[in-house]
Image (cartoon, rainbow, N blue to C red; front, side):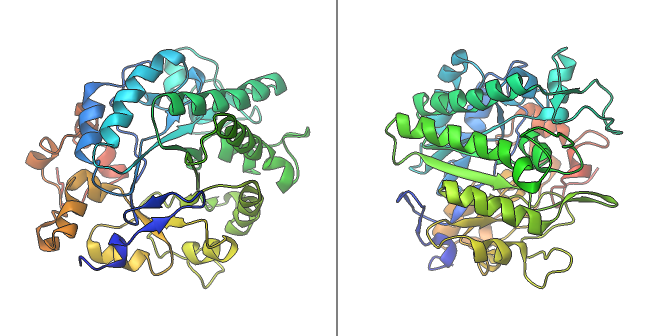
Length: 379
């Protein structure tokens, strides 16, 4: 496996070359303080996984306090966050790979903010049956401020020594909520047609690009993560053909890589959307310039899975595999793929440098093991 495509180099759109095609997937480790400050547990967790891939990506960091989706989520909303973020970036870069800070706003999903009594916002004020806290419509002034705050969060990432940022336009966060026809019923410049529903994500992208250019950081990496569809039974926010259109608009502005989030057990790296005979990766590769690598993942547990994922994509992210075995890539490089651990046990859960809250979340009834199961971990 040491001569595999997985371990071959990969060049991003801005010319930065990565030593391999693997990525530590962005995963919320729920290890931060209540206000989003970095803890030593998080530093240790990411240092232990700093060798996983050419790109090491944090879990989503909120750019405003009212964008916090879950207690323990990482924050990048104030200048006092920078010192902790610097420690995190240093740990992530300790193996020579690129440290990426993912930035986001939870919008209606900001349950963590709701618990703190903060105002939770969405594109449109409406009833969301699964939400038990008030959700208000974001105002035009708040939109303008939020766009600026994405830029400020990017500057903090630069100041903290990160090699890049990834914009979280997926998994039902506020950017996706604006694009979704289900959650965006606005009639101003931020809603209506597909192009208007894409206006807020694009405005965030433009502001982030402006900040990077002003900092004179041509090597600073700008990634973009998407959910390729939003379909929940009869509830359809958008289909893959809609997201392909938005992604073309994004590519016209300029990104350095595209990261396709296939979250949940219903997806695999080679899944195909309904009505299409190509995989998600194939569909997005077809519209993406060769200079912009496309990353895919989901159900990648072994080196063989990673190789198979690269049949349609340029890079592959490791999520649960990296939680189970932080030495996944080191063993692969050493020609010891057979030593990679692919199943979790209760004993191992507490011995692979996971933040305590994350490990505990996998032992709770109806917890993470039910939502995002680790192979081999049983009650």
